[in-house]
Length: 229
Image 1: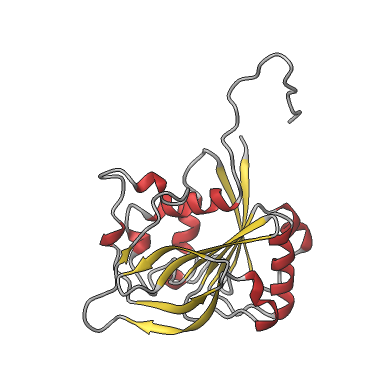
Image 2: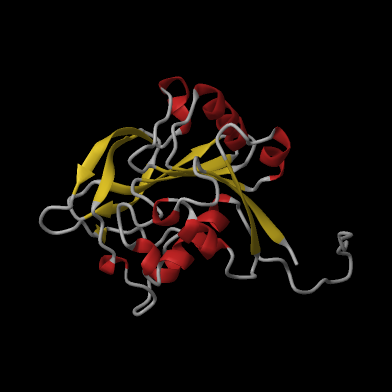
């Protein structure tokens, strides 16, 4: 069966408990249309061969060095997809900031009073269109206790916002590739999203969109060429 290669760049490797990529990897292990072939790499352990073979790179709340930012920028320019998780430790160097759909600012603390909620989703976008219908997934049930303030670039598109209006998911096209920036975490550090039913389809649809994945045609007609396995 066809697999979509995803590289997760995480400082803690495959561990880290609720503050690491545990929930992320568990979600990627589920599903077969297509299967996700996920590999976790430390920021300084990503090889050029792995980068060349990846469809999507997920940068999970890390300090990105100028050298790594340059490599990821080239990856996006030639058609790769980047999913940047802008958690409490995330940084991106100014020299390569044009790759990012937004400039990172400080954290916003929502642990006092009411937690933040998601709203103003772009249901016409491929990431969210499956949630348009009633009872297809309730993002408003997710509680956010922290997120990063960001300033979107002039060419970026905000796909989701928190209740106070701050961007939650921002997109930008870079060369032949796409970049999505998620301004909270994908673990339990800043929200309870991984415990909600919408987490898995949201993550899957985001990565499929970044990879420009198209469902294979289940049949062939006369004149089509069958690719060898």
